[in-house]
Amino acid sequence: MEKLSQQEEEAMQAVWQYGEGFIKDFLELINEPKPPYTTLASTIKNLERKEFLTSEKMGNSFRYKATIKEEEYKKRFMSGFVNDYFENSYKDLVTFFAKEKKISATELKEIIKLIENHKS
Picture 1 (cartoon, helix red, strand yellow):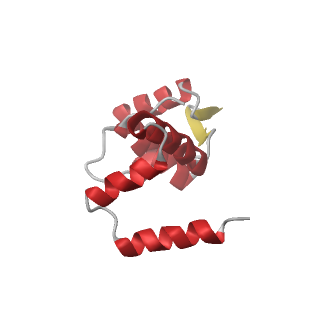
Picture 2 (spheres, rainbow, N blue to C red):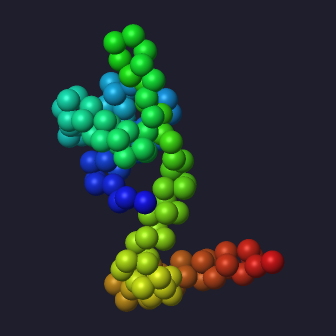
């Protein structure tokens, strides 16, 4: 899966939050400083070209909706991220965050509990 730019991810976040909608709807959900309408429209068209969105013509406008769920994108993105930066090792990923003091011992214990509780 192609990695989205920050601008594309921000647009997708708005689409996922809004559901089916028009560019003006998505623009309302984007944080300040908001991009110009034409910039967002261009980003949305790129996302459609990349097949992250589909559109339906409604009068003079297009209504857009996501073709991929947010959870699916996160899964694919994280798998690619771990593969690209941590040689497909989640242990190395967690070790990196521990060394950078981005995760606490308490959080690690919570993660261990989650893993142990999800074993079959």
